Image (cartoon, rainbow, N blue to C red):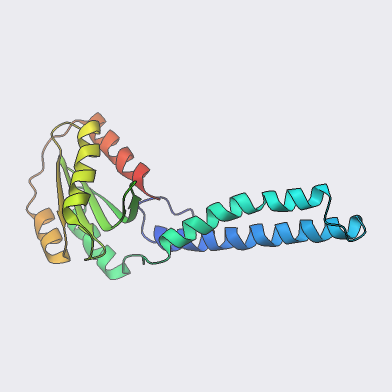
Length: 187
């Protein structure tokens, strides 16, 4: 089963795939290089050396992906289940949201979207909440009209805020666009 962006365990899955990609590219490059050496009388001046070097490019892409995701952990299964019960029927829940901007990497444990609201729970307490709120607000306001963005730093306030949300009619097109935008931000 494929784990999609925003699903439980996405971050863990992403790390594993990145590590496998790095190892696969390194092994293939090494094999191509060694085959080239044997086919050309132990000379590294051949097309196989160039092909082996070209495998470094996708390998570097996988390595960067692994380095970015390495410090962050997927949300605990019990916490995810708790969040799922609080949002069921009210909002769409996304988890393991690792977002990059030109200035920062932001890790959000959860983002709940619905009822013209985007509520985020930060995953790392050392993050700049005002920056995250501004970054998300600017993007969300481009894709949905009248959406309110709230960024919270502890689970208790996150769950309390979600429990107190009144169900509203929202423009389906705007909600779809906001959800697509948020998913597109994830590394």
